[in-house]
Amino acid sequence: IAIKNGAKGVVIFNQADGGVLLTGTASVTGEMISIPAVCIGKEKGFELKEKLKRGKKIEAHIQMTNHSDLIKARNVIATLKGSELPDEKIIIGGHLDSWDLATGAIDNGIGSFAILDIARAFQANKLRPKRTIQFVMFMGEEQGLLGSTHMVDEAVKNGSIENIKYMFNIDMGGNPIGVNAGGKLRDTTFFKAMGEEIAAVDTLYKNRFSNRSGLHSDHQPFMLEGVPILSVIGNLDRSIYRCYHADCDDFNLVNKDHITNTARFGTMILFALANADQLPAVKMDSETTKQFMIDNNLEEPLRIAGEWKWE
Image 1 (cartoon, rainbow, N blue to C red):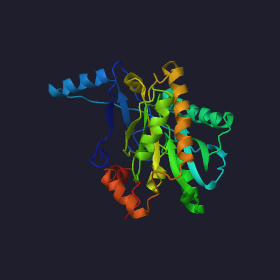
Image 2 (image 1 turned 90 degrees about the vertical axis):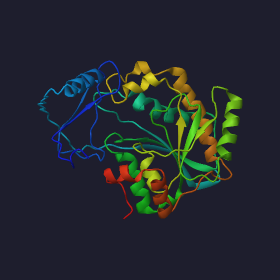
Image 3 (image 1 turned 30 degrees about the vertical axis):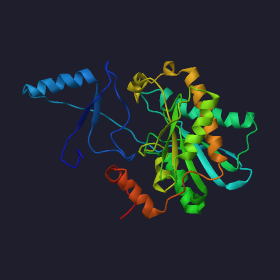
């Protein structure tokens, strides 16, 4: 939008206290943009705003060099074959990559390592649900959902997209107290009943439920193909999120009990879904998916990102 309106550069000031700086890119497509975009701390941002209010002229001189090169990266996939419906797949995934300035502990170390521990829990307990489960660590999420988009593109190409019945994404989710079920649900009975069973095992799980659909994580390419999506409602301290894409996203933010709960409750949720007699949602066709995006106010951001596929 800034480029379209003739801006020569963009200065973003962060909303976190203490001079915390964001890293990443101002691009939403994974491509380089044509103008410089820099981040400054919250305090400096308000200082600049006050100067502008007083009518002071401010000049910014930005000199920056970026390198964007192709590299080879791989999704890591482990498959547990279903006992009764092996052709029906539930994908559970989280992304491995993080930004340069950020160390990636919360975004998304806690998610990707929860995927690993959930896979270990299935093996240790010899769980063999009806449907096939694929445990995936995606690469290139921060650069434009590259790993998950590749997986979906390949599934569309070979026709196996119809076999993917659900996508369970764990991105910055920790210490779950409920689930968010995106997509068009038949009803909410399945998730409420499942939550009651989990809460009966451990009252730390509060059986919260929401039905929202957003963008900018590895569930997005699946959602755009009409695949129902699922994520956890986390219960991390809000102060942790001030370190999103920042140098303070450090291992000292990781709480052992929280990541253990993600693995425990995540295993229960995944097993219930993969073993359900009837799934709580089904894949939407293209026109229904289009209307779903419109109803959830996702058309404009998808168009800006060049991801709107209906014309």
